[in-house]
Length: 141
Image 1 (cartoon, rainbow, N blue to C red):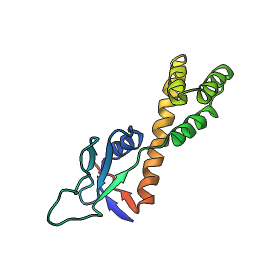
Image 2 (cartoon, helix red, strand yellow):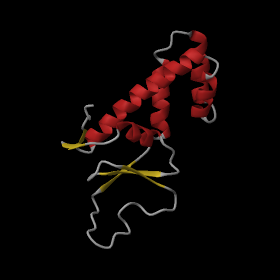
Image 3 (cartoon, rainbow, N blue to C red):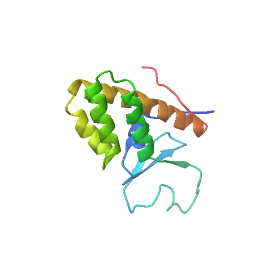
Image 4 (cartoon, helix red, strand yellow):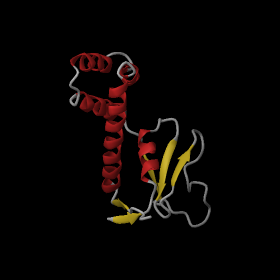
């Protein structure tokens, strides 16, 4: 594995990001770059010292992956009313938005969801690094 110092939280945010922007990992510096829609990918406009494999695109989680994360959260619920309402939200129109809206009825569960999502996205970010032959280097303070 190739060790790389990077901001793991920014990688997590890129994985959770919308599909409007593109995110890239600079394999030389560990920097995470965000490219606005319509802008060229990093390195595309370089005339000299072109390194096509320097930037690795970070694909955001798909809707199916986000739904799976929400469904996994449902298995941890002990409140049958909340479980039923949140399950119903996930099968309706715009399931993720409906799920988040339904969560607003249970502030404690909303916090639990955020903790669950943080833990899941951290695992997914580490898996993404491993899948790409990379290893995050933790900076000691």
